[in-house]
Image (cartoon, rainbow, N blue to C red):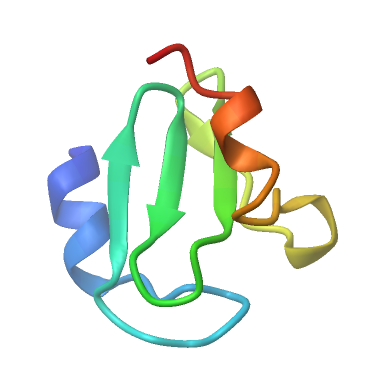
Amino acid sequence: MELSEFLEWVACPRCESRPPLVAREDWLICTQCGFGYRIESDIPNLLVDEAVPPDQLPAHLKS
């Protein structure tokens, strides 16, 4: 399954909004709550406990 197809049906695990997740670099970022979920080895890590809060996310992004 392509990432774009995945993003069409997946909801943010934290705020349950859909379809708010957008791909940026190695991250899926929720456009509603702002939390980031790392993509590791082409697999999104959607565990809420490991999500990065919006105020800390810029430090993890390259640009």
